[in-house]
Length: 261
Image (cartoon, rainbow, N blue to C red; front, side, top):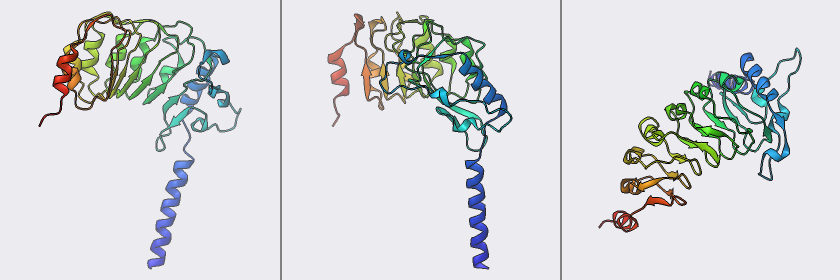
Protein backbone atom coordinates (compact mmCIF):
# COMPACT_ATOMS: atom_id res chain seq x y z
CA UNK A 1 0.00 0.00 0.00
CA UNK A 2 2.82 2.36 0.88
CA UNK A 3 4.57 1.58 -2.41
CA UNK A 4 1.34 2.16 -4.34
CA UNK A 5 0.91 5.57 -2.71
CA UNK A 6 4.45 6.52 -3.66
CA UNK A 7 3.85 5.46 -7.26
CA UNK A 8 0.66 7.50 -7.44
CA UNK A 9 2.44 10.54 -6.01
CA UNK A 10 5.25 10.13 -8.55
CA UNK A 11 2.69 9.91 -11.37
CA UNK A 12 0.92 13.09 -10.27
CA UNK A 13 4.18 15.03 -9.99
CA UNK A 14 5.36 13.77 -13.37
CA UNK A 15 2.02 14.60 -14.99
CA UNK A 16 2.06 18.13 -13.61
CA UNK A 17 5.65 18.63 -14.74
CA UNK A 18 4.82 17.38 -18.23
CA UNK A 19 1.79 19.65 -18.43
CA UNK A 20 3.93 22.63 -17.42
CA UNK A 21 6.65 21.75 -19.92
CA UNK A 22 4.22 21.30 -22.82
CA UNK A 23 2.20 24.46 -22.21
CA UNK A 24 1.64 26.24 -25.51
CA UNK A 25 0.58 29.79 -26.13
CA UNK A 26 -2.76 30.85 -27.57
CA UNK A 27 -3.42 31.12 -31.31
CA UNK A 28 -4.44 34.78 -31.14
CA UNK A 29 -1.20 35.64 -29.33
CA UNK A 30 0.89 33.69 -31.84
CA UNK A 31 -0.74 35.71 -34.60
CA UNK A 32 -0.16 38.97 -32.71
CA UNK A 33 3.54 38.17 -32.28
CA UNK A 34 4.01 37.25 -35.95
CA UNK A 35 2.23 40.45 -37.00
CA UNK A 36 4.46 42.42 -34.64
CA UNK A 37 7.54 40.91 -36.26
CA UNK A 38 6.35 41.98 -39.72
CA UNK A 39 6.29 45.59 -38.56
CA UNK A 40 10.06 45.77 -38.06
CA UNK A 41 13.22 45.59 -40.09
CA UNK A 42 16.20 43.83 -38.53
CA UNK A 43 19.03 46.36 -38.56
CA UNK A 44 22.21 45.59 -36.64
CA UNK A 45 22.87 49.33 -36.18
CA UNK A 46 19.53 49.81 -34.39
CA UNK A 47 21.03 48.58 -31.10
CA UNK A 48 24.18 49.94 -29.47
CA UNK A 49 24.93 47.03 -27.15
CA UNK A 50 27.77 44.91 -28.53
CA UNK A 51 25.95 41.72 -27.63
CA UNK A 52 22.78 42.70 -29.49
CA UNK A 53 21.19 40.12 -31.77
CA UNK A 54 17.81 39.73 -33.54
CA UNK A 55 15.70 37.78 -31.07
CA UNK A 56 12.75 37.79 -33.45
CA UNK A 57 14.70 35.58 -35.86
CA UNK A 58 13.33 32.56 -33.98
CA UNK A 59 9.74 33.73 -34.44
CA UNK A 60 8.51 31.63 -37.37
CA UNK A 61 5.24 30.16 -38.54
CA UNK A 62 5.17 26.44 -39.22
CA UNK A 63 2.39 26.01 -41.74
CA UNK A 64 -0.15 23.50 -40.42
CA UNK A 65 2.14 22.36 -37.62
CA UNK A 66 1.57 23.35 -34.01
CA UNK A 67 3.55 26.42 -32.97
CA UNK A 68 4.72 26.94 -29.41
CA UNK A 69 5.64 30.60 -29.21
CA UNK A 70 6.56 30.07 -25.56
CA UNK A 71 9.87 28.67 -26.82
CA UNK A 72 10.64 31.74 -28.95
CA UNK A 73 13.53 33.95 -27.94
CA UNK A 74 12.39 36.85 -25.78
CA UNK A 75 8.91 35.43 -25.16
CA UNK A 76 7.80 34.39 -21.68
CA UNK A 77 4.57 32.50 -21.04
CA UNK A 78 2.59 31.72 -17.94
CA UNK A 79 3.16 28.03 -17.25
CA UNK A 80 -0.45 27.41 -16.27
CA UNK A 81 -2.46 29.53 -18.71
CA UNK A 82 -0.09 29.68 -21.68
CA UNK A 83 -0.67 33.42 -22.04
CA UNK A 84 2.27 35.59 -23.07
CA UNK A 85 3.24 37.50 -19.93
CA UNK A 86 6.69 38.78 -20.88
CA UNK A 87 8.40 40.25 -23.93
CA UNK A 88 12.14 40.67 -23.35
CA UNK A 89 13.31 42.32 -26.56
CA UNK A 90 16.05 44.66 -25.40
CA UNK A 91 18.96 45.03 -27.85
CA UNK A 92 17.10 43.08 -30.54
CA UNK A 93 18.20 45.20 -33.53
CA UNK A 94 14.62 46.32 -34.21
CA UNK A 95 14.02 49.25 -36.54
CA UNK A 96 10.55 50.62 -37.24
CA UNK A 97 7.59 52.37 -35.67
CA UNK A 98 5.02 51.30 -33.11
CA UNK A 99 1.53 52.65 -33.76
CA UNK A 100 -1.66 52.56 -31.70
CA UNK A 101 -3.04 49.73 -33.81
CA UNK A 102 0.09 47.58 -33.39
CA UNK A 103 -0.62 43.94 -32.61
CA UNK A 104 1.65 44.42 -29.59
CA UNK A 105 -1.28 45.89 -27.70
CA UNK A 106 -3.34 42.73 -28.14
CA UNK A 107 -1.04 40.98 -25.67
CA UNK A 108 -3.14 42.16 -22.76
CA UNK A 109 -1.72 39.64 -20.29
CA UNK A 110 1.76 41.17 -20.40
CA UNK A 111 3.40 41.74 -17.04
CA UNK A 112 6.87 42.60 -18.35
CA UNK A 113 7.80 44.57 -21.47
CA UNK A 114 11.41 45.43 -22.31
CA UNK A 115 12.03 47.19 -25.63
CA UNK A 116 15.21 49.00 -24.57
CA UNK A 117 18.07 49.71 -26.98
CA UNK A 118 16.21 49.49 -30.30
CA UNK A 119 15.35 52.19 -32.86
CA UNK A 120 11.68 53.03 -33.10
CA UNK A 121 12.29 55.79 -35.60
CA UNK A 122 10.99 58.81 -33.67
CA UNK A 123 7.57 57.25 -33.11
CA UNK A 124 5.51 58.32 -30.12
CA UNK A 125 4.63 55.90 -27.35
CA UNK A 126 1.01 55.08 -28.27
CA UNK A 127 -1.88 55.67 -25.89
CA UNK A 128 -2.77 52.00 -26.46
CA UNK A 129 -0.19 51.23 -23.81
CA UNK A 130 -3.14 51.59 -21.45
CA UNK A 131 -4.13 48.05 -22.55
CA UNK A 132 -1.38 46.66 -20.32
CA UNK A 133 -3.18 46.89 -17.00
CA UNK A 134 -1.24 43.92 -15.60
CA UNK A 135 2.16 45.39 -16.45
CA UNK A 136 4.70 45.40 -13.61
CA UNK A 137 7.90 46.11 -15.53
CA UNK A 138 8.22 48.58 -18.42
CA UNK A 139 11.52 49.54 -20.06
CA UNK A 140 11.47 51.72 -23.19
CA UNK A 141 14.87 53.33 -22.63
CA UNK A 142 17.38 54.25 -25.34
CA UNK A 143 14.96 53.42 -28.14
CA UNK A 144 14.52 56.63 -30.11
CA UNK A 145 10.96 57.34 -29.02
CA UNK A 146 9.81 60.91 -29.57
CA UNK A 147 7.04 63.30 -28.55
CA UNK A 148 4.91 63.54 -25.44
CA UNK A 149 4.85 60.72 -22.94
CA UNK A 150 1.20 59.64 -22.92
CA UNK A 151 -0.53 60.19 -19.61
CA UNK A 152 -1.66 56.57 -19.87
CA UNK A 153 1.82 55.51 -18.73
CA UNK A 154 1.14 57.04 -15.34
CA UNK A 155 -2.11 55.05 -15.10
CA UNK A 156 -0.44 51.61 -15.18
CA UNK A 157 -1.09 51.10 -11.50
CA UNK A 158 0.61 47.69 -11.18
CA UNK A 159 4.05 48.98 -12.23
CA UNK A 160 6.96 48.34 -9.91
CA UNK A 161 9.63 49.43 -12.42
CA UNK A 162 9.38 52.19 -15.04
CA UNK A 163 12.30 53.20 -17.27
CA UNK A 164 11.73 55.49 -20.27
CA UNK A 165 15.11 57.22 -20.02
CA UNK A 166 17.43 58.49 -22.73
CA UNK A 167 14.78 59.12 -25.36
CA UNK A 168 16.01 62.64 -25.96
CA UNK A 169 13.05 63.85 -28.00
CA UNK A 170 10.48 62.87 -25.39
CA UNK A 171 8.74 65.29 -23.03
CA UNK A 172 5.96 65.07 -20.48
CA UNK A 173 3.11 67.27 -19.38
CA UNK A 174 3.69 69.30 -16.23
CA UNK A 175 1.54 67.05 -14.08
CA UNK A 176 3.34 63.84 -15.02
CA UNK A 177 5.33 63.43 -11.79
CA UNK A 178 2.27 64.22 -9.69
CA UNK A 179 0.24 61.63 -11.57
CA UNK A 180 2.99 59.04 -11.04
CA UNK A 181 3.09 59.74 -7.31
CA UNK A 182 -0.68 59.36 -7.05
CA UNK A 183 -1.22 56.31 -9.24
CA UNK A 184 1.98 54.23 -9.27
CA UNK A 185 2.24 53.72 -5.55
CA UNK A 186 4.00 50.36 -5.88
CA UNK A 187 6.99 51.73 -7.80
CA UNK A 188 10.38 50.50 -6.69
CA UNK A 189 12.40 51.85 -9.62
CA UNK A 190 11.72 55.08 -11.53
CA UNK A 191 14.12 56.12 -14.29
CA UNK A 192 13.20 59.23 -16.30
CA UNK A 193 16.68 60.52 -17.14
CA UNK A 194 16.86 62.98 -20.04
CA UNK A 195 13.13 63.17 -20.58
CA UNK A 196 12.11 66.83 -20.71
CA UNK A 197 9.75 67.17 -17.75
CA UNK A 198 10.27 70.91 -17.23
CA UNK A 199 8.50 71.26 -13.89
CA UNK A 200 9.07 71.36 -10.18
CA UNK A 201 9.37 68.08 -8.28
CA UNK A 202 6.15 67.53 -6.33
CA UNK A 203 6.45 66.77 -2.65
CA UNK A 204 4.00 63.92 -3.18
CA UNK A 205 6.77 61.95 -4.90
CA UNK A 206 7.93 61.17 -1.37
CA UNK A 207 4.76 59.10 -0.97
CA UNK A 208 6.37 56.38 -3.11
CA UNK A 209 7.56 54.58 -0.01
CA UNK A 210 8.85 51.49 -1.86
CA UNK A 211 11.27 53.40 -4.09
CA UNK A 212 14.78 51.99 -4.10
CA UNK A 213 16.08 53.82 -7.19
CA UNK A 214 15.15 57.26 -8.56
CA UNK A 215 16.86 58.77 -11.61
CA UNK A 216 15.85 62.26 -12.72
CA UNK A 217 19.03 63.42 -14.45
CA UNK A 218 18.71 66.06 -17.15
CA UNK A 219 14.93 66.47 -16.88
CA UNK A 220 14.96 70.30 -16.86
CA UNK A 221 13.59 70.32 -13.33
CA UNK A 222 13.53 73.54 -11.33
CA UNK A 223 12.63 74.87 -7.91
CA UNK A 224 13.50 73.26 -4.59
CA UNK A 225 13.90 69.50 -4.47
CA UNK A 226 11.66 68.04 -1.75
CA UNK A 227 13.80 67.09 1.23
CA UNK A 228 11.33 64.37 2.24
CA UNK A 229 12.43 62.26 -0.72
CA UNK A 230 15.93 61.95 0.74
CA UNK A 231 14.68 60.16 3.82
CA UNK A 232 12.64 57.47 2.08
CA UNK A 233 13.53 54.32 4.00
CA UNK A 234 14.12 52.07 0.99
CA UNK A 235 15.85 54.57 -1.29
CA UNK A 236 19.34 53.38 -2.24
CA UNK A 237 20.05 55.34 -5.44
CA UNK A 238 19.08 58.94 -6.16
CA UNK A 239 20.42 61.01 -9.04
CA UNK A 240 19.20 64.49 -9.98
CA UNK A 241 22.28 65.85 -11.75
CA UNK A 242 22.15 68.03 -14.88
CA UNK A 243 19.17 70.06 -13.67
CA UNK A 244 20.70 73.53 -13.56
CA UNK A 245 17.72 75.26 -11.94
CA UNK A 246 17.00 72.60 -9.35
CA UNK A 247 17.88 73.58 -5.78
CA UNK A 248 19.04 70.74 -3.55
CA UNK A 249 19.59 71.66 0.10
CA UNK A 250 22.50 69.32 0.68
CA UNK A 251 23.27 70.44 4.24
CA UNK A 252 19.72 69.74 5.37
CA UNK A 253 19.81 66.40 3.61
CA UNK A 254 22.99 65.35 5.40
CA UNK A 255 21.52 66.32 8.75
CA UNK A 256 18.27 64.45 8.11
CA UNK A 257 20.08 61.27 6.97
CA UNK A 258 22.48 61.29 9.92
CA UNK A 259 22.03 58.13 12.04
CA UNK A 260 20.07 58.75 15.20
CA UNK A 261 21.20 57.50 18.60
